[in-house]
Image (tube, rainbow, N blue to C red; front, side):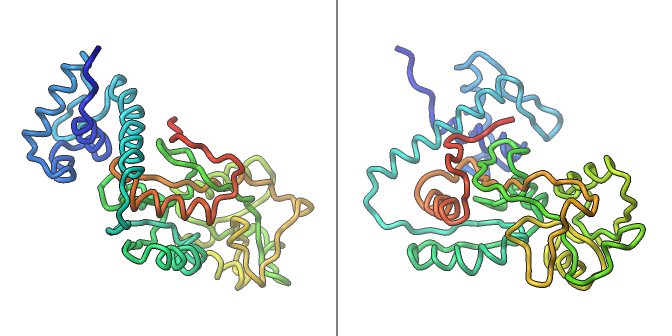
Length: 295
């Protein structure tokens, strides 16, 4: 019988894959760079394939590395679940959590406050940023868990919520009737903006991008002030806004996809406690994916 793979080696391997650097990975797993390099050398020898392509100081996964990465994360998750099963102690620790401001208004006061009541020994340090910034921060090792509004466009995003997207304007306002129609939206990297602009290009509607912000509150303010038409998920609709129906010639929008992403170490214990609480509180999928969805 073949000996099982070394979980410590797999943890180091995943840390390198997450950040693209042996030096940063060594810091994350509390080892020297030479020790991490030796672990990867032994892992590659064991599997008989190169796992990384090295280009100066950066490294990327080879095809064999990508195959291993998906399976290694599942092994790390299973290991954490086993340890949790036999751990009778109270959960305690700190979690670095990122959430887009689109959902901060409803997530922070309601969901996180209830989590703190049931898990008083878990400290959650929260950052509210645009999804793209959160994804970059995850790669840089600044977060343990993030909620992001890019859905499963990213590897290892655990989709747990979808929402209808609506064109919205101010009640009684004139922004919808203006030619060209002024639009308030997120920056160019915002996937909601891309979906909306692609949909508009398939119509004859004349428009211009009048207000750009990565802050959902700023977009809502522009709409409520009748300065522009916007597009928002159902949960972000506010009093004073009206949903624009199909009769106004605006195209239907793709549903918003909301997902959770974990760092490769963020399984079991305190991380599962927060992740499960978020999914149970916000999730609206009847059968959310149990395994991580890779591209």
